[in-house]
Amino acid sequence: GRRVQLLLGRAGVLADMRDIEAARADVEEAHTLALELGDESGIARSLLVRGEVERDNGDLAMAIGTLAEAVDHFRALGDEQGAADAIREIGTGISHHFGAFG
Image (cartoon, rainbow, N blue to C red; front, side, top):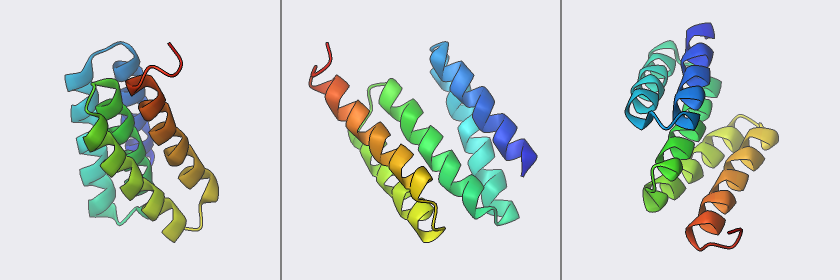
């Protein structure tokens, strides 16, 4: 639903501002709401944003697991763009972790 999208958007902004705890709170609220609504797309998107927040906080192993779960959800929905976005985020996390791009 719309509230799920708004929460995820705000979580992304908060993460960019390095307010990780507030970003996490919004992601978890969005994920719970998506589950309650049966919003499969919202569940997949919340996993994607959760993985980004985990990655940005240095939790690479957790982020990879969460993003892989997002890939599975997107693929189950037939959303190849969403799956590609999640795969790209995994690659970004690995690259940054190992210093491939500075």
